[in-house]
Length: 561
Ligand code: ATP
Ligand code: MG
Image 1 (cartoon, rainbow, N blue to C red):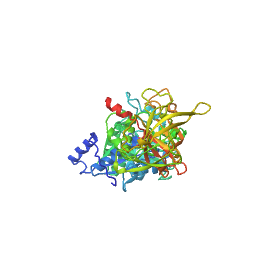
Image 2 (cartoon, rainbow, N blue to C red):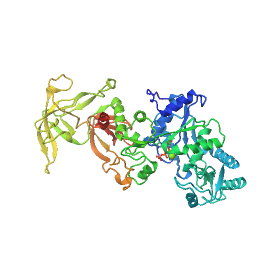
Image 3 (cartoon, rainbow, N blue to C red):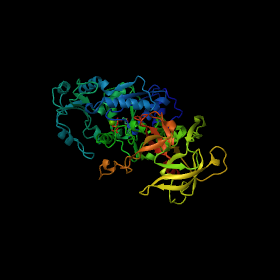
Image 4 (cartoon, protein in one colour):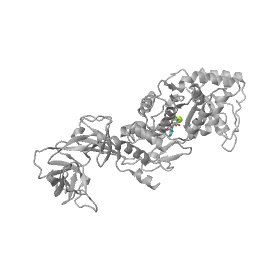
């Protein structure tokens, strides 16, 4: 693997199983996992957990991890999704090398195995209608009813199954079912469907097939073909495990992979199901799959998340056997932790208020030293220009200050970061009474870094009016107002969208040395938050996405725990 990961994931119940298997030499010392996305949407942070888990295990055990597209359902799958999935897995820092597979690669083999099961009396063609099949399934407390087609002869089953494959029947006319047990307390085991007829063009096999295998049948066999040892999936598949094992054992396959389930990731204030994400995208509630408010990997990337922060988040949340919801504040905390170490600090004024320093010489510019990152001296210093007219944040001035307001108000002094102490003498207003400008004076004896003895309580950021550059800042907040937008039975999740999830400020002012920023570059805007240059940002229109504000609500939560 190219990247150097300096953390080794802590142990968990999956690693315990693998350790045991290595001890007993169950797979001749091999550890082989896979990440099996269905290409019907973009990957989200929940998938990232699964990717980190599967590729992380392969990395730590000197094993292998395959990328396998689970493309058994032709109508929903698209090439765009395949491409985005590859890009996202790579971006997260993982490499499947030459092991990129598709479940559709195995359609021939799956078909042969189905014939074998029919020949051994373990599968049959059912011609009941969908409604009849449903009625015969029974309920969790009542056993199901056997289909009248259940005891068809092997010859008839073979003939019908060939006919299904050869397009002799309408969609839905027949299905192939495994012959297991209609009275099993586990409803999954009540003669599950293996194949259905579906005339749809497949993104890889085109129109070659008009029958397609079901996930429950295709998955264990795909795992076996690829030599997977540990097939890790989410908890909802726990009740499918007997079926996973049934196919492998009834086909007399050796070196069988084993399925292990873990709890899927749920995050507060967001939705994670691909169906819901697709709905948001298609209804135009967000700008696309990479909208920075979405929990998709591409959205998080555009928002300014780093692969390191997402990997570290995955490790922090660990793997559990019981479902739960993780506070999104932990994700936000993780990106702050990462960017705090490496994002250069800059000054940017989001809502500018003009200040004229009346005793500073007109036309004069002074170069001041500014530190790029107090957390990392190796990031050095830069020079920022200071002049008679500057902009400060509107919020940093109050005509009538509340208690403990240590910023600027009439008669009060404040320090300008890396510059001087200034004092507000006069407030200028327009005809409607809005404040348009402040007249201040500076104390030339108080230049930062000169060991000036005088200090004041507040320090604020600023930019020089003549030198500053205009930029757009997009301030993102959580997409949903409620903690569990999927949990509200009364309301559609789309009605719970936070109307303030995006605020666009198009006249924000930034330090001049940011004129040549590149898409993806990350900064801390001092006192405000972390910002990332949008992929569509240009030199003539610089756009910053706010990743997170500085205030960390997780620190508070952690203290309470
Ligand atoms: P969704 O419910 O969002 O449609 P899915 O499970 O259908 O997701 P797949 O493409 O089939 O999506 O998932 C690929 C892999 O990612 C599977 O192994 C699945 O278990 C895992 N995965 C999906 N969602 C999560 C999640 N929220 N947390 C952890 N793993 C997940
Ligand atoms: Mg799935």
